[in-house]
Image (cartoon, rainbow, N blue to C red; front, side, top):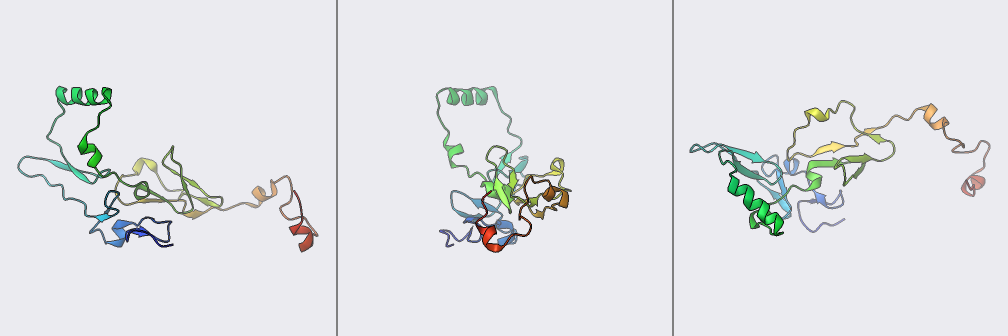
Length: 174
């Protein structure tokens, strides 16, 4: 499959590549707006301004800026008038595949978690309480599921009937 942009994975239906892996951490964020991996800004504290990295939109936030009553009124007013803010329109949100990669399954749009294909499951030692959001994708549906003999025998009909020829098998109607 040929992808339109170089930072899309042609082996994964042109979803964004794992930017951390491809660029060894130098460009760790896939920008939806630019359709390529970009650098993560250094958020440092300087001149009495404490900053923190916001991984959802790849920006630094000023931790010393407090929300005022006027800020709240402005937001409520914009919501009421159904107005938008250019700053929020210009922000670059993280692509869903940069949060979670469903290697053998699909992303449930309601839960934002993977629904694993038959025969696959998540690592049993994964503790969601220890999950730290970042721009490094969390990979799910990576462990082949052990299917017990009892599970297979629990079907009401045999999967392949005993003493069945190939011709009977391909024409067998369940």
